[in-house]
Length: 326
Image (tube, rainbow, N blue to C red; front, side, top):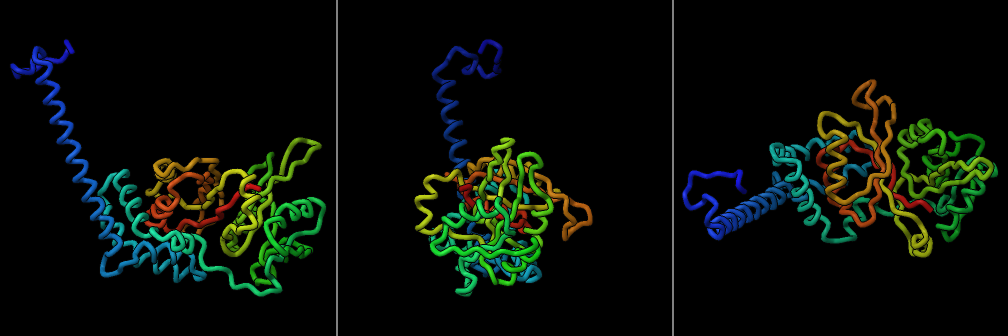
């Protein structure tokens, strides 16, 4: 305190009570300013939702990401993004996140609506394809199939001679799911298989690590379908034994948002970073722009706020999976 001087007589350090009162008044004034700013941000959140007479701008963006037609999805996103971008283009990162939080609270008051937006409507799949799981016939895949089959009431295996046939069977809805390796302890992510996932538009619904006891290594296998899969009541016991739930997606990071922005948004929403990989694919936007593929643990997080952030700030993100490791 001795190093702080003031030209104001009553604040020269002799009247401690007066200094403390002034500090308290300043603190109260700051609290009022913060509250007023938060109120304005709530108003901005409401204006985003109701921008241009469209009461469902963010809902439209999120729903469009579930569209089967990429071109149509892209058009809807571009039509709706302008309102959101104009509203908070000059706000700080924290203020953007507050807006996303308020939008999520307004849009997702109904838990069923949130589930529908994230997972889409239930698959309309034929009885012949329902719970039918395609994979290449070998001892490793047989072992993995036994683990994944515990998630279903009436699972059936379908054997194929090539990875292409396995994937085509799901894409053409002759099977509901397929099994593919996606990672090894020695090589990390298997880029060729991730390229297949993005090519067919598959989603990871569960993963399982098959240990190789002879060398203490493992291969991670994924159960993949055309849509994200909702957990069923049968999985309650399995879920209680499973590890954390994960969210994995791919995004081409441009000037904004950068990967740092995405990590800050995830931290704001209490999501736990598991890993980040770079997928060196040729993207829609450029000939040589890598995709960033983060994996986050989402148990106990504000996941809906994070999804709102992604939907506004990088609507071209692709959901690879929302899944548990069994």
